[in-house]
Image (cartoon, rainbow, N blue to C red; front, side, top):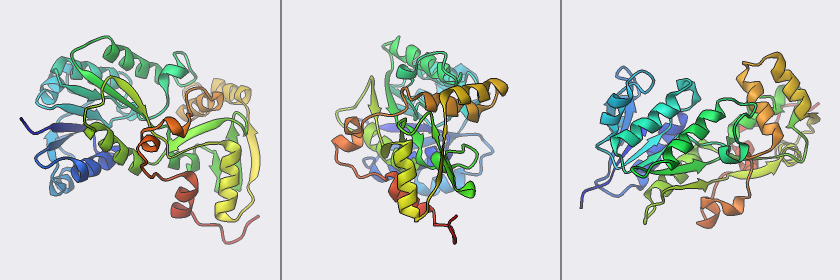
Length: 300
C-alpha cells in the first residue's frame, strides 16, 4: 500500500492554513506538496514545515502542463481564489480531470452556489457553477466541495462596510433578519484537513462548515456586548444595494454586498455541518471579536 499524497494549490492565507493542518494531522509518510510560482519566497518556510514546493503557474500554465503536475497525487486541493482571474477555476478543474487525479477539492470555500444559482449579482459565481457541472458530469475524478461561508474577518473589513467601527455603525445586508454563515481561515484549514483525511474517504458531495451562523441583528448585538459599545444600526436594503451596483457594475464589493443581502445560499444551520456532527470546536463571532478587536477608548 502506497502512502497518500496531497497537492495544495497556492499558499495564501487559506492555503497556508490548510498546509499547516495537513502536516499536523496527516499519517506519517504522507507526501504533502504545494504548487507555487518558481520565484515565490514562500517556499523556504514551507520546506521547514516538511511541505514539498513544486514550481508552477496556475494562471499562465496550460491545462496539459498543470495536468502533468497534478497526475502524481491522490488528492489536489485548490486554495486559489477569484484573484487568479476569470476562467482559472474552470481550467484547474479541467486539468484535474485530465490528470486522472483520484480526488479534486476545488476552490469553493464560500457560499452554496447551487442555491444561489446562475445570474446572481456576483457574476463570478457562475464560473463556480461551471466547475460543479464539470465535476458532476464525469466519473474519472472524485470531487469534494467544502462550503464554509464568508471568512469571519470579512464582516469587519472596513471596505466591505458591514461592521464599520470607525463610524461606530453596523450595516445589515438586506435587513436585520438576513443571516450569514462565517468560518475563520484557521478553522477552515483545520476542518479541510480533517475532511480530506477522513476514512473512508468522503467524495462526490458538498460538506458544510460553520464557525457561526447569525443574522445581522444578532451580529450587531454580539459586537455591542463583546466590545462594550453601542453601534448605530443602518440597514442596506436589497433594492438600494442593487441600485448602488447598477451605478458601478464592475465593483466587486458591491456585487458581494448585493448577493449576500439577497440571503440565498449564504447561510445554513450549523447542525448540518461537519464540525457540529463531529463535535469539533470552532471560533464563533463573539470569540473572534474578543481575540482580534478591542473596544475604543471612548464610545460615542
